[in-house]
Length: 268
Image 1 (tube, rainbow, N blue to C red):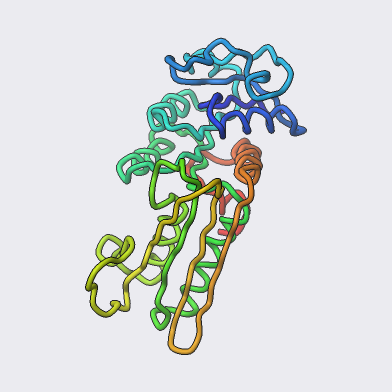
Image 2 (image 1 turned 135 degrees about the horizontal axis):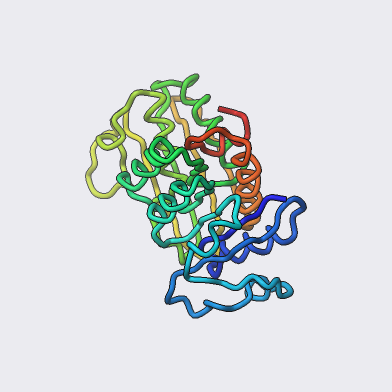
């Protein structure tokens, strides 16, 4: 049995992870962590997620969970890097699905396994389908090359805090890396006014927000006479949670290092 502790256990994603951990064969809930000022501290993690009581109380002290945990799963908006540093220093593993991290924070995450010999799976999107989208986008970008102009459109619910989504930014990075384009120079986050003709190296990234949309991403490759599109649509968040648990299975037997979901799926 893989012993899981959930960081951000009282958030929407945290509750889903708690629920799926308790309901999925091969996993056991070992801990539930929240910020110290969370009103759900000391509540039972199971009943807080809509299930029966488990005897696992939500705690504001991550140190109290470390010894009894194999893998931490973190989708929180808290101190992600700080928690990952503590966990890897203890030679434990962590799966991180938090989006909106800065470039500096991402860089710090990549350095942790080298320094601490820890194990991390970090991905802006844990869905198997989205990670197939990353793979297919890279393939299409190589084949169609710069003869096709690229645009990315994403839509999420009206409560999402970051924009563009981490998934949209990752798609842009995949295209820019494949085509050796300076993304900082050629990313276009929407367009307004007299922008002039489109530059060939531009990568358009467009954000829509509204309703309860879980997540939709479309990559468009356009040229004279035709347009090729790749689209992924998520109808609920279960796909992200299932991906996170698959990542937890993967990381148990992995060597120290930092991985993404394409490593987990074996398509890298």
